Image (cartoon, rainbow, N blue to C red; front, top):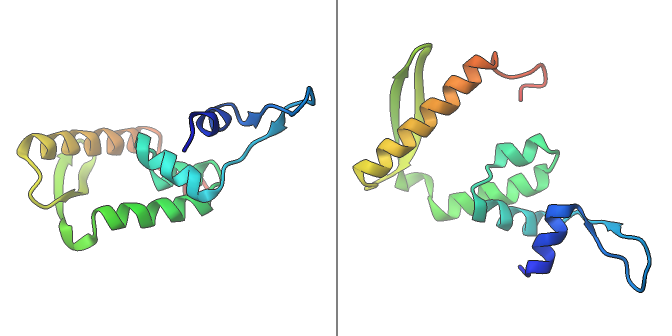
Length: 121
């Protein structure tokens, strides 16, 4: 992806040609999914901004990098219960610990914000 395309995505528009006004810019699902993958945006994040098309592409990309058979389940106790998460098999203990802390933080934020809204998000 070019730096120009990335900038258009960040701004949400692209400059008009020959002095015409800027036009709205919405990247294709493929481009948005690749950008999301590069910076760690999740499929759920994309769904929250009504880009289910890009979320689906990103889900397939993630599955290709870490097929389910290369993942293993882990869990951790938090104040309000237990959080479950997946980690790549053979991941270092330091990375597993980092993933565990991240999963706990997300779960605690979820509980603090009273879980999903009425749409299930």
